[in-house]
Length: 137
Image (cartoon, rainbow, N blue to C red; front, side, top):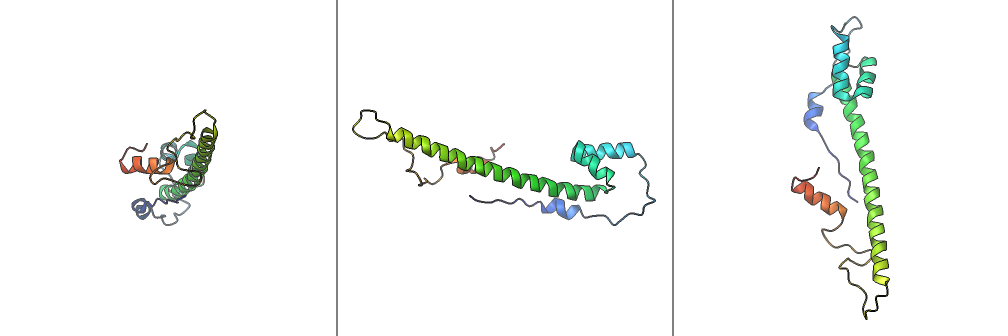
């Protein structure tokens, strides 16, 4: 299982926390500003960041951090699902090979023996190949 990390240096370099503003600063149109936050960060997170008084850059940095955490959780979940699918495929392959078909030799499905992997096979390589081809969605 390989671990990938995505870095977004351009965004991080552009979004630096603004200096603390003084408490007397007023927003000209709070409803429009709230809409901006909610359109950019989603209804829940946008409303939360706005109500916490974060300026837009601080909210963007916080949201980037939240999205990275979510991405890591989703990636771990996908890796676990892929491993389970590969395990189930191997079990099905074993059952198929052990079937008595009346033939003198077992059915050869072309799959590697359990615990072995052919280079360039499996879900990970399929997704990597599609990503390399620019076809991943």
